[in-house]
Image (cartoon, rainbow, N blue to C red; front, top):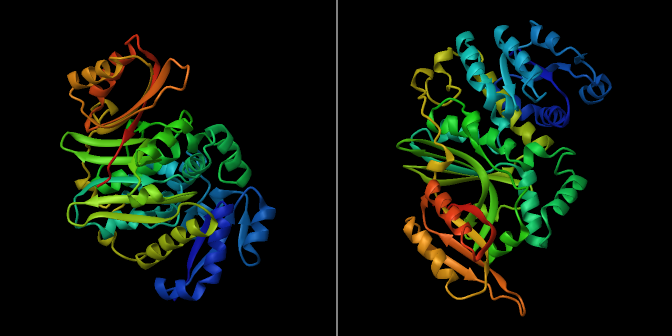
Length: 436
């Protein structure tokens, strides 16, 4: 059959991996897709790199709009990234009647509603498996594999940079700043790691997963986002003593009054499989009412793992290239008219448990004062460590784990405890999730 012609925008790490895997597995991919898939045009500002990667027989240009306008191109693969020119190119490709495959989580989390509406109107597909968790097929699992379920919650380690940093901090007892430098030297962290370490990258991804899981619009602007820059290695050590690991999680949960959508460092029981995901690996737990908890694990970045997801999308689009648009899987799993505009709950309305570390004067009655305030706020204690003060010291640490409570009650109690004369400085507070 006539090959599907692909126009590639951006030939960096993932673009190069896509070329490599397509060539190596050409026969297998063709068997699956029903026809050959060929990259016939590439746009990149670095034409020398493009020529080196693409080889002979591929049209090269530094004008991405020329590829989008090429009448011979069936599918446009957008690997440029960012919100700006990428959005213009994707919308122009859709306008020109071309299907789109993208790995751009930031674009979809922020502008996905507009892009999907345009694609729906034009009758073309926008596929984005590579936008979340690299080579892990989590988008297909949420959209298709779990379609019998009411998804109740999902939680994921979806940023390899921060997971590598937290793993190293735990294993070596080193401070954040030192491990970040190591991550940059090893290539796990960018020169400017802000999007990773401040939780923004993870928030883009959990926004996309939440929209598919619950059939709601993208609502990135409503997500609560905390990174790992303020995390102290002493808290990682205390968590370990209490049987927990600290991971940066993207969490979304359906509640009767709305949806929780949040990213923050989280204590997880060490016996959970996801708590043992180390280094730059990714993992997502999805809990459905029929299936229970399911775990998806693998490489969340890299040339070939991400290319695996890009090519899987190319195969899907090729299979459905001539299908009636109404017979395709909807972009957000639910039919467009069934997408519900449920609100994202403010973080103050989240229900979770807490890890509290406080520096206190080493004198009688301190613990009683603290527990009284917690009890008055309806917060019960699950576990506690009271460290013995070093010889000659007048202060010590108290570490408490609470049972489930609402965030606004925890905030009110923490404010009252910090006002006690025997409590020195701010209390360190981290959220906890049982994930079961």
